[in-house]
Amino acid sequence: MSGNCYFCQLCINAPAYCSFDSLYTHINLGHGNDPSFKFRCELTPLCGSIYRTLPSYKSHIYKNHRELIVKSLDTVDTFSTSNDDSNNNFALSYADDYEFDHERTNNDNNENLQSTNEYDEEMEVDYPLFTKAILEHDDAPFDMRKFQKYYTGFLLELREQHLLSQNIIRSVTSNFSILFNIVLKIIKSTGSGANSATTAAVPIIKVEGIINQIIRTIEDAAKNEYQFIKSCKEFFQYEKPHKIELNESGDCGYIIPIKKSIQNFLNKPDVIDLLVKNINETILTTKKDKDLLLTYRDGTAAATNKSLEKNINSFLLQLYSDDVSVTNPIGPKKDEKKLSLFYYILDDLPPIIRSLLNSISLFGICLSKLLTNPSHRRIYFEAMINDLNELQTQGLTLSTVTGRLHFAFNLLAADNLAANDLGGFQKNFNNGYFCRMCNISYTYKSIPLTDISFLLRSEKSYENYLNQVLQSKNSIFGITRHSDFSNLIAFHPIRSLPFDIMHDFSEGKLHESTDA
Image (cartoon, rainbow, N blue to C red; front, side):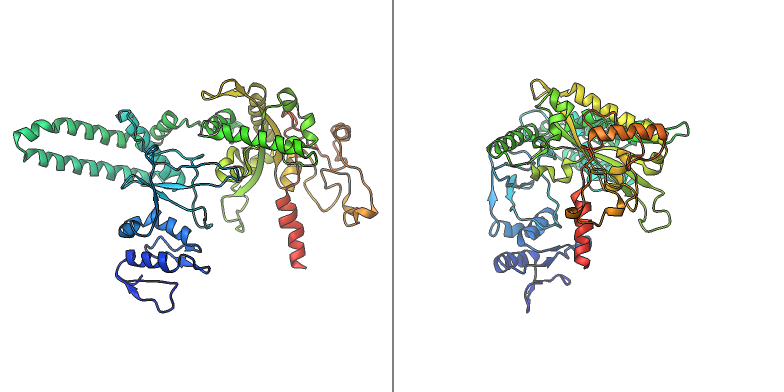
């Protein structure tokens, strides 16, 4: 774009277009099937992303610059309207191959803009499983409470999705109030110049009262952090993280109550149906072919899982742990603000849903340096284990489901260092018995498996060695202490801490082979 002219980046001798609408039509008609499509958006200073397919570029334009292509919408693009569902959300249908039909609502003319199934990595894709409608078009009266709910949702989106600070949100709220005051003045001026019949039909005093109430609602929603959190609790079932006091000095960690978190997730549309459908399909598939191992349920560890033994229909719950640095990772203070994070995921979700970041939920967060203290570790993990054990023993109920839902812990995923630490094994890998699955020592690690034999660790041998460690206070076969999760139902350090293929293969052996 240069001045008021637009140029096609894909043409060698590109003519000038006086409007973006003309350029957009040219791109659709002339480069729709171009295999080397590569277009950078330069319409605003905030843009600049490169799109490698026409569908991804069109989706960006629809989302951010739609006002520039009003004319071309009627001639170039295809629309799909729906008379049955006028909610401003996305329509998603799960076919047998889990293909998505992703539709975005056009707020200006109440028609649904048909998108495509092709996306670039630059695109941000939302799925209705994790989103809610912003507006409702139904027969129910739209009262002030419903207005407050949607405005709180708007502020929540600004804060959590777009990461705007509270000061910016207050500025937005203040300007909204000013806009409503301007609207009120316009209505007053219009009413004062009308004849008596018009004035009787439009009671200005009533309109003024409604708008003043709206202004107060807007201002109260973002007045302070307390009021905002209160609105989130009221309308979106926000659950405040539990603060775990680690000592009298005020050091603490946080745990998000897992029962409430799972309840909110399962109350979303289609989640329960997806879980049950996927479990039934995998069970049916493995029954047809006994050699298939598709899920944790098909392995030997599931046969001894105490929670699954109690209720075979339990949903599987997997934990994941990782450390992140919130400061410069190569700076002098890189470990000063390092955080230990714990997540959970329902392992029975279909793979295409389970792989989405939105299906992974935060469970706990604590400063890593606080967990180096044995007393702090015991207090923090005890609170986490109690929460998980309560879920496994009591289950939970949903208003949309009859009966009680049960859950079973299956695995704790982590990199090797974190897994060894949580399992009570040695935390170095350049000497001793570094493997938590077998008793091989570092001295023999390079000998081919065809030339050496070694014993795999078992639950029985682990317990014997652990008893010796607790008596002698010395490491034996790589075991140094009790596991932090030893009191968690269905957990055992030998079977519940699998190797992470991403770290062992992608960052380990694959890296070595590509460097060779």
